[in-house]
Length: 269
Image 1 (cartoon, one colour):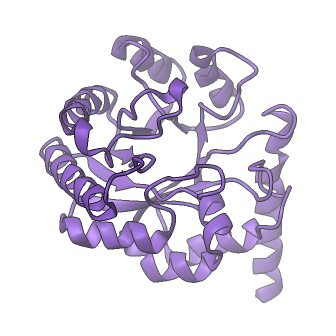
Image 2 (cartoon, rainbow, N blue to C red):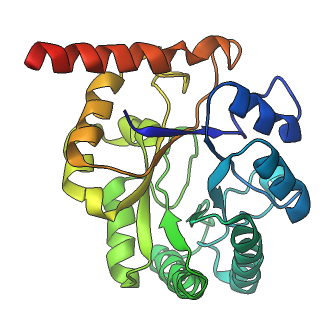
């Protein structure tokens, strides 16, 4: 079975954010991720992680005004200075909290701006961020997101993310592969993961439709988890889904999937 990280932005919403660390640990998680640490003091987050013996495996670069609908600023030609300042802030948090990798949401493409200029801005910003993060010993990830939940998002498919990675030309830029987003956009999950695993540094999950926990939709998660094991994937899988009821009530999928994988392995033997 892969190693799972609880996404504290999505899971354990029954309690305030800072209480979710203990809730995740009580549920059996040893690792967590979340969208943004910036509303909280580094000391506050470090204390919660240490108290609950949790590893923070991922958070995002600053992504603009989230409440106003912004989903990243790396694609905005008039916000380059803000993006670069955000990289520095993210490194401060990640270094203090011992986070090995940071994700960049590139954002919603601005209306009326030439597509080539938008792409060039993304490439330049990612090249800057990859170099700065490399100095700090931190990986940079970039994540394509589906165009149904995020209309206008500048990167929608795994191929688009990989094209940008090639254009940046850094050995410190990798793909964050969100199974839910890519199921909605392109399918071919197993083939894509197999082909591009060396470029995938982090995986996230949710089922489709609904973005709920595994086992509630169409995605064959026992098959995918067994594939990740067979491929030797040693990173974390972030549980970035919306619990159908409560978080704890929905966690039975972990044991259910583990049982299915064990059963399949026994039958194969």
